[in-house]
Length: 577
Image 1 (cartoon, rainbow, N blue to C red):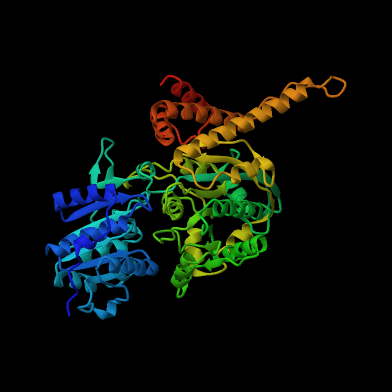
Image 2 (cartoon, one colour):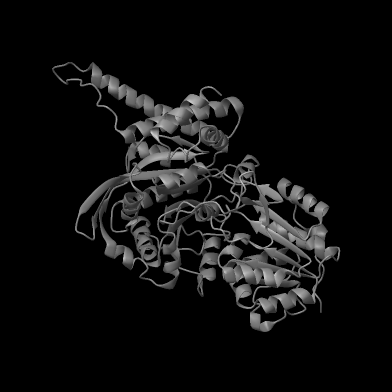
């Protein structure tokens, strides 16, 4: 018995961006169509509506979905079944064909790469729509890209989806359109783009607060030298990487202090109305993931769900966590992309992976909105590169071919090694030994702006930020953070005035010491963010867009990585706008 044609009248209502994109798709009727939409915006629903339209009007007879992981195969199949499209998630290359009960199948990029001839034959047998979910994965290896191209060239229609910044390598992605810009470089072109800023404005996603923690770190090199550095201060990439890894060491004090703060934030959200709010810790490797789970149990008295890789049983553990009221999950890679756990509201970014692609995938796990007012909070090390990514949540990145590449991040290959062996961090341990690390709240980043001054872990100043109301609109978050920062600075000025007013016999008031370069940068960044916030309130433009315009006018990297001269130039420029 053939699968029944899905009924369009029973399809759930579409969001505004989905309706516009659907109209654009049906108007063009082209073979290839690329949609870029932020995580949580509803790419799956959009794609299934297109599949239903094409099945209903006879344009296609079959649907093939290509997903990154085995878990996402099940997720796609279940979502499709809810709208009357039956997809075989258990299809294996040896099966050659699906049962007539199905409209098609869901496969992984790895499956396609292993047997492209099987999928090409299936595609040629019936008029097929191919949905390529997170299409950037087709560039993960030449085998996958070649397999995707060979398998699906005969398809009647191809729909490419992605919710994250495109890749930073030079592997062209099959079926994606590239156009040459004025600089001579080829850039990917999407037919529909619905970014995080758009989704936040439409209340489709949650506002994300980034709580960046710095602190003193000490480690011993393989030569026996003991080094120390303050996380977040300007230094060489090697020192940043070692300080970063020292902070993430589960045996130090930094992680326990940050986990306590994150759990306190989770409790605030639960008490404020998100009664089932959950937390996710993203670890670099399997060994540290297990250690973090033990720290969570010591902190909360409750065991955490541990998901180590895309292995047997991992999907079931994720599904159980998604439907439960359990507080914490610890994962290495399994939930970095595409996995839908809407109740995740607090994250701890405890990994050294730092490409824009991976960072956006990870943060995408926390932005899925369920009702107005929900916010997300992500705790992360105060590392310039990560702070830059957090400040540019709204940035849209195309895939650029031929551009000279700067090395992004410090240890992104740790994730790949972590999937192969539990001892992935062995080489790291041989190079240096972490000795100690302490944590303090450095700043809160929201909508591209930085708020607050340094606050030691466990102090009332930190609690002020951890206790922000759990249900707020984006505008309310910005206003409240601005007020908190103003109160904090006013309290500091009062304390300084009180000290200055003390009798000379009690205390001798010395002139303030000259600021270090690091202190000057912090002060300039806060001045710049205050000016950007003022312009935001005057014009209504998002903070991120104002920062992006200043970078366009003045040049240079994000403000977290900018030099003192670059910050001063941007301050002078924004005052003239």
